[in-house]
Length: 154
Image 1: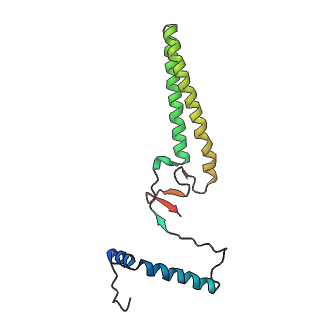
Image 2 (image 1 turned 30 degrees about the horizontal axis):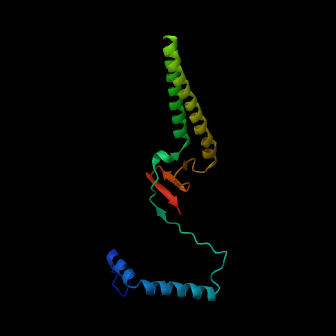
Image 3 (image 1 turned 45 degrees about the horizontal axis):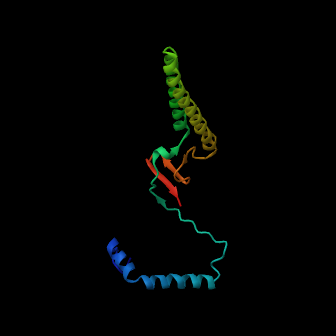
């Protein structure tokens, strides 16, 4: 910093330097690893962790939270109620027409009940996690409510 008078190169200068000196940079890195091994600074048990944060490409719809699951369960229950109402209306029609309509409605009600069961399963898992949420796309991602972005640790 003293030598350059606090000047810093722009991204293009750095990219060109890497492009022009790629072989030399790789050679220096490999020599550095060899030196560290000779000095017994590296072992098989060593693990390095980078604490960098990256903007995730996760969709909010693919992030499960207890409140979101509760809303989904309410939506399913309302749909089931609507289908039961339509079943009652179909029962008042002629038997041949009612039979066709009720078979279709009963299938829809059954599929909604199965979806309800699938929705209830992850709720117990969510309550066990410290963040009380889970991403279906990337389990390491959580949404930060106050900052409105994803926090992913790699």
